[in-house]
Image (cartoon, rainbow, N blue to C red; front, side, top):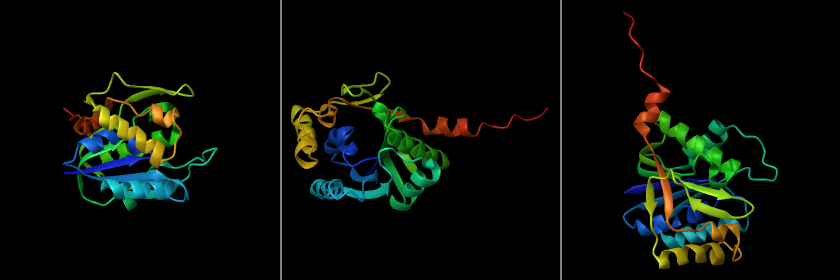
Length: 208
């Protein structure tokens, strides 16, 4: 079984779905992060972590500056996904939620690009799940959203390992937003691909 995790930043794959990735040993995971390939700190940490976990990691260098520059979602994000993600059919695709978890613009951009590609059939997903969380910044309060329909309960050991990776391997301090956002259960919303494509191309009403 092949799974693709398509996220904006290296660390998103741990914060929002790291427990599920660990729990699903039957899945061969590929993680594509659209930002930070040119980051001398985060990029080597991402690649080292992927190698240790047996995950195929891919990075791109989409603008992630402050302030963020305007981008064309279809070209700048969707084009990178098409160019970098191995072709073929994915049994399961995971990506950001419509709300960007805590409203991050790049999270929302990736969500829109993935849905556009899935609608067009360019990204072939057997199932498409988005992260289902509601977070507040700067308080750092995060919780699974009540509109999630797949819940993955982590064991205490899995949750501890998820937080350890964020601290010890990605380097975020204890009590940071990144650590506190690592939670159990993990929550996901499944996109109904058939309905999505139907709504994009409604049937023609025959003339009488």
